[in-house]
Image (cartoon, rainbow, N blue to C red; front, side, top):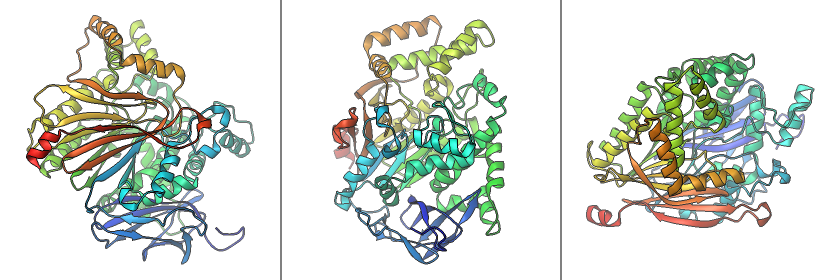
Length: 561
């Protein structure tokens, strides 16, 4: 840490270990001033965005399957690890080691526990507890990757500390329902969320992949054409969305990209081409505004390669097509890219295809039926009273998951079932959709069509640090019940709604409380392990393992492996 008035730079956030492949890694940092950032002898100069400085250091020349402890130096002075840190040294662990591949995942982390009022009643932070648990484990049991599936920050639900900070900045009181307005205020959210020591260490050591959901921007972001028409007509939306997308690009998206993708990314190359003291904010604002107006200008989706596992992360927010008569979760061009990535995974012989999308594909059956029913009414009666009523319900009840985009639900289903039938080559052992958003955890599995060689699952884990109010818990428990499924199914049939193109059954859950999931992959075997901190904030942050669910067919694994 530097003293006030010192010429020594300070590490404000990070390091975050982001993209890691067998021979390279990227390390992200935020500093308090311009400087040279060094990791393992590789250097990068900071770039400026507004009043903030960042760097992304590309470390090359690593060995597959290796473990390399690292330090961070700013202008030659070591700033990480901190001298008094109680955690093991941060290290880069490249794919290729023997043994199982462990992936941790979850979504919805409302700030850090130290910044949240106890009166809010939010249970202990699962990501903090998981960090402590990992730090105490032997290194060979650490997760190999961390996937954060949305709502890494909450721009529309602010802590008391952030409201106080905003009040001082704005010179006027910020109400309890206040929200951030611009880029500078977004940076406060990341500082609040990523500064606690436990998570800071975890993010410095476990490679992370991230994707946004609505709360990174605003609740109900891109729910429908009606929502978008209303919000874009305001005088504050342009500043809000550009600040949100610029901050997302800097703090989350940049680290999602591989070295090859960075080399071909026009925005990153434009930022790097700026003079050392230039502000990159105008370049990034232009990118953000273009992305908001025309989602085709930026692809937020991406792929991670992990040997026998392949992760395809799908943007289910920014790229939506909202025309009421042609609603799509992503446009046709991006869906073709998704389908090509699925086929490529089969051609490359992966054993486990993972699809990360913030919103669940397979929901509790009753909720799935209600979303399909609501979409049918909104489309069929668009512009008329019943259509407006369906739109009001859609926004009030957050009816905007894959089931509410029926065409896209069917297209994703077709891509996964084609893979599972072996239509593109040898079928992998599992295809697993990883999601968050809905503030509880469950596992579901496709049971029809019955001619699938691959086992196809939906795993949902949320929240890492938030809570599900009692009515939501009741609603999701009811959503899985047989009588609710029959009732809502009959409701959907009265509106002549076509049933889902696939059938599924609940394999486990629902589980409530703050939680983190693990996917354990070894050969053709796969397991889903769920850890929960509980629902009582006074009970402490110790994780309890509540589920260890096999996902692959052991007989098939023996025969083929």
